[in-house]
Image (tube, rainbow, N blue to C red; front, side):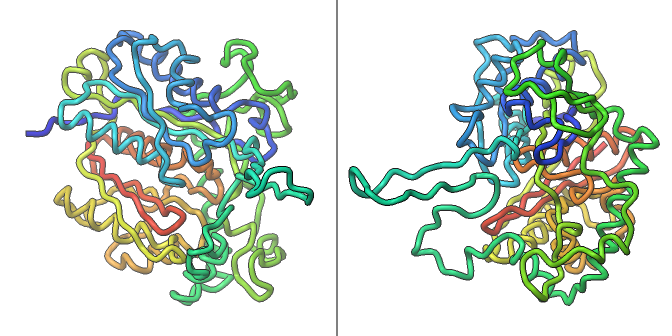
Length: 415
């Protein structure tokens, strides 16, 4: 018999834009910041009771190498006896970490787990493959690890390895989603996010980042951020990519980014970002040890696969499977957080869920406005749903996202 699994708390950094206010902060410091925040917000919990720290990260080639979960736990002051493991399911890495924590607690392998994710796309390194022969005389190619395919296996069919933006164009074609619909969706995302910040909807989950909160200087840079969401530095107190002043006219002026006659632009796609998020996950005994009321329970999860070029539709089947396992339907949902990699991708998923009320989707905006720091996004979604359910007092919520190379993840929460 499995145990009930609780989300006791969930926190995240504000999401920084590429090259913005968090660009000077190492990813292991970002992750340590949210782990430390969870412990500070639950002072009754003895950190030695933590059974594991599980973090998602989509890169792993830079400063987050050598198991960023373990490094971040040590930097956060978690006892050295507490282990840590890093998982990679690309954009779904943070949610994968939450799901692995959920499973461990459910079967009794753990009682208290810290789970989440981190990504610094600003600090993603270039990589140089080793040459096939010693002492090469010619030039060698550097590959950016910021996003997408690199060093592709030539055995992969070409249609599988199209760019993420081209994949979004394919979804737009499949569901006849035009430029105007995508721009309107993007505008709504920014408007909802701006309203959420104005009304304090994120106050319970966002922990600002500044130099003092990172112990005065274990930072990877020395910028001069002001904490206002602008500039390159080490301070940020709100999501940096939200554009409250954008308009349909402004979005319409942007050129297609992936096809000369395409519909996907920088304005109706998620940006490149930096950020971290973490959740405190327990069983009943662990919950008592925290002395807190949980935000929500995790009741089901699911993963699915799809043709890689149609990765954007990965959530469609994952969400259906997760709801079935939880004994719920789309009609039961009080809220659904769907990661907005692209407006075309999000609209494509909604087109395949005709029974879903679109009014419950991303009530505080989505990744087009809030940002998409790859390894953190899945755990951010889970934490946001948990806080929404706690604010409502009851209900069922679902968090789901698409994953490059053709996968989808989903998580069902109840309160």
